[in-house]
Length: 453
Image: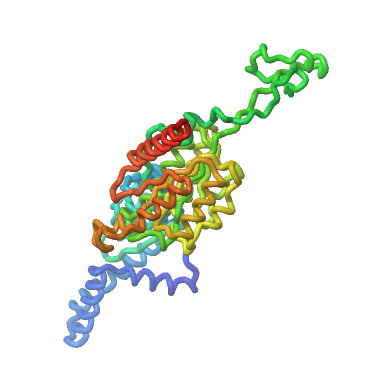
């Protein structure tokens, strides 16, 4: 980018000169004021020598401002984020590069990048003389405990004259965006879904196995096992045909995130809502890595932009892009004005959701009934309840432990068929994940013993 424009036209000179005079530093203004005062005193006292001194003091900052304003530095700037997507509480490094693309060296430059206050102080760098065709590279670190998207830029160059009489600022037009995503915890490989991988033992077969008449062949592809060649179809079509592989149905996992503002107490990085967002992100990435088709669903029925009807498929080349899309969505997700889960219920496919993992705030009887219908419409269901009474008890935001609304919610979820746990403040998601697996295993074993008796 060019930091100084073309030569100003007569109509632009006035505005440009006003800009230059406005850039006078304290030293420049002091020299100008002293020169004017000396000239007035020289006129009153009739001292010609003092008049010369006054004129010198007054003209020097004006000359510096004019020369600086007409300086034709051509400087290109660029910015690189490493990484561009960072978890909350982690640091990212911003690399700045300045290239002098003119044929003359620059003077002293001050480089400044504009960043939101939540990322830290505004970085400033002093660049000494940059030779023609030369470059300078600097970097700084940013960190935020809050999720979100934060603009970085535009870059600003502050030009100054050798005497420090005037400073002018030139701004670049481009900026970048740093995405701060939720914290992600590594989860242990438990069997909450009843399957060790993304393809379950109870999968449906896409082909009949009654005999050769039911075989659906396809054309031979490089790497196919020659033992699967279907000779009858090969003779019929005149090209090598193989038996089509059985296509198991991919296991699914839906993560339900309760974003209702009425369901959570408090704000900030240590609030219950942020724990729920972080938990949803951790479960989504964990199930995606295990080969599940994952889907993010909120109480408003919202999902991730670009998500297909079957969700995002794991163990594929697009899984990294899918993870990025989901993290970008969770980075900016906020509270909703909803009061129930009816929109989310309408988005379920009826018995094809597989594992349903929910992160819930405060619940009332109506919401518990809606979650019960969602459980009957899906498969196995696990709920992590972040009750305000439990989270606010340690901070004194609610009365003592006598209230039992959270226990009533857990009891209602258990009766509706959910594996439900109450999440205390500061709990580890990995520990809660194991506890949910133990609770589900115990419930299955108990029902099996009751059936045998």
